[in-house]
Length: 131
Image 1 (spheres, rainbow, N blue to C red):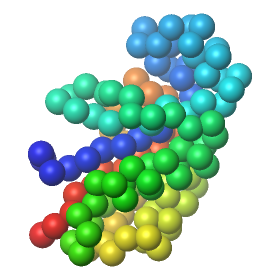
Image 2 (spheres, rainbow, N blue to C red; image 1 turned 90 degrees about the horizontal axis):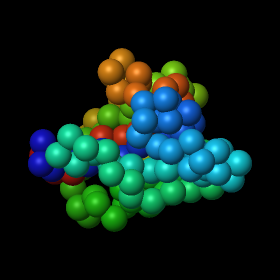
Image 3 (cartoon, helix red, strand yellow; image 1 turned 180 degrees about the vertical axis):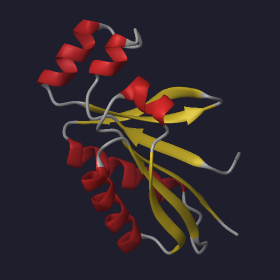
Image 4 (cartoon, rainbow, N blue to C red; image 1 turned 45 degrees about the vertical axis):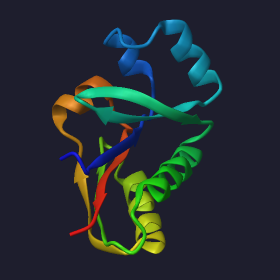
């Protein structure tokens, strides 16, 4: 588990506001500017990594962050995850397969518990490189 990196972006901040994790003013501003936060999960806690201005920009940022983490010359093991965003997950999977040498690469639905906190539209990736 310590070798696995998880990166994800949200479709909307609305569900984080409902859960009390994001102030309403921040969510409104983020929505107006089309800001898509990208976060990682560390020790069971979501932490922001960066943000993008659009959904496609968020996918690009996730790919760039992956490139920084991947050990060159080692195969990548990847799970692309989504919460009711299969079309965006397929785009991410296709881009990963064209950029990286993958031992395994598949798409899975995000867990219902995580989906309840983040809402629909979440797209993410969990990966590690090596054997």
